[in-house]
Amino acid sequence: MGPIILLLAAFIFIVDAAFLFGKADPKGAGVANVAVGVIMNTCGLQLGFTAGGNSFLMILCGLTMAFSLFYIVLGWCLLAGYDLKALGWLCLGAALFTLLSAVFFFGLGTTGNTILGIFALTWATLFATAWLNLAFGTKWAGFLVKWILVVDSLITLMIPAYLLITGGWPA
Image (tube, rainbow, N blue to C red):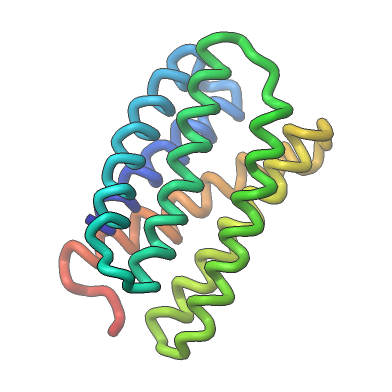
């Protein structure tokens, strides 16, 4: 389930970057975000309900919820023409949770989890810059968001998903 969630996130990161670079219209980006958000949310809930109390899986469920709820709210706002300030405040909560997730991954002390910790730090940075941009209109943060989306779509999502699917993920 994890690699599929990563792929969904990679795909929507690309859509959202294209939207921020002015290459995709708000309504089309909105539909894509709602679709991916609903599918990811369903996958994340399934992951959480079957985790059996496993902390690692529950953290993954929480990360999936942070991202999928962002996509659903962003999509809804783009489709309805709502202001994105409240979404910015959702990003603050997501940034804090992804930062805590990074602490969790680093605390496990294995090589693979160190990699996940680094990924979670980049996602926390993404959510924090989105918070600054959406809630406060900080222009430099908006500039960073689109570039973080481009880089993270490949490095923290698509390539790891591929490696997990093909068995090449470092143990």
